[in-house]
Length: 107
Image 1 (cartoon, rainbow, N blue to C red):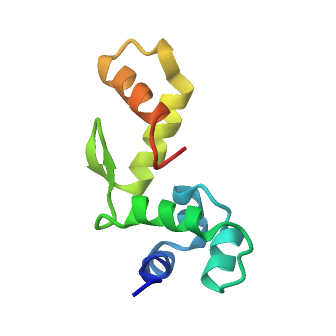
Image 2: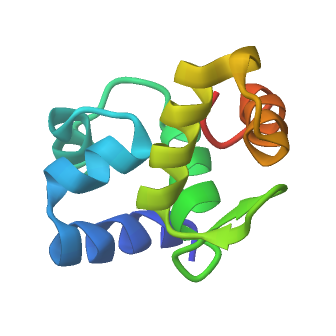
Image 3: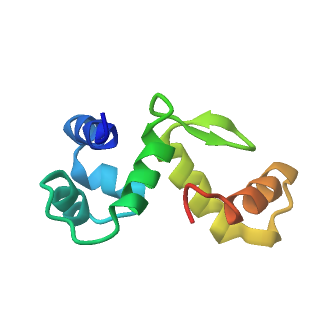
């Protein structure tokens, strides 16, 4: 089934809505809509990779610091790590910053 990732995306959009899914994936809701309607002119391989890395593991993102976490928690953690950066005094936050900086899911 070559377009399994589209079915995963479609199912998640039906559950959460295109706006929430767009935020979790880092794409606009317009891109999500275009992809699902087979009208997206951009690189589908990038969208597929992001969908599978975020929703392809039973709906969990595999974080090297926190383990399996929800996509919403991943984006929240990533944004916090970007904001705090190297100024972190908490060792776990510093590990998160270093891991998030190299994260294949978000970058």
